[in-house]
Length: 141
Length: 126
Length: 108
Image (cartoon, rainbow over the protein chains, first blue to last red):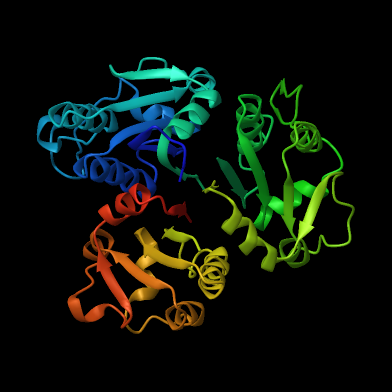
């Protein structure tokens, strides 16, 4: 715990995984949703592959194996999850902040992020963590 | 606030990022004033007995010019006053115990890891 | 005394490190700390009755409180009688509770 934090109801999450690759991404979003559900303000530092979670150009597609067209398949996109959590936070009067590590964005070419997701660096992770009540880092494998 | 950075993997980013991404992150946060310690366990123990730069990658005509230098990365952390620990049992399991560890890296027992966890305000396991 | 919550995603069938992670949790508990382990993802697999995992047996025999993410259990179709004695199903929100309570919350 950050014993000196002025933001007692703010939690920071650091994450590294890109979308679509593994279960950690699902658990991470479930934690963000749970945090808002429990009226915590949320700050996310997206590092390495996680900067692609907010990529605005993610696109749905159909799935011939499933026998479904694009509309029916309604493929989940993490950018939509982020937007949904932003709306949830707004409805509840909470804050939901998201920073992508800028160098990680550059090397992956995912420069277009959905609205409300900013660009920063490791100093922002430290700032977030220092100001928050607590921080959870979820590494990749 | 003191944060213990736990790194138990190795070589997952050294090719493309030309460093260990968490050692790099730690250096950057330290420069921003963070109070940090690093525990290298599991395969992370390999980093403490490195003696040269990583082999340069080559694909077709493309040749890497700046392969990772873990010895330098750990050296920089030590210069910035970040304590760096390696778990003795992790070295032993991997047949690395007895090799010289990088300057300033402290070899600790698994028992001492308990104390590190107790003394840190937060533990970030990457 | 500190409070620790380990979010245990790694399982001992595929990740050797998981056994050591269980040990560390037990050692912290033995040292007088309050320790919980929340099994998530494939981390719930040793918690099924009939699973063969001495390292997990040792964790259950320690004073660590072991919980399993109900979502992960549902995904893997654990029925009520499939969960080993000593493991309680739990909602993911307990992670948030622990973070808000200032506990040391660590992802494995």
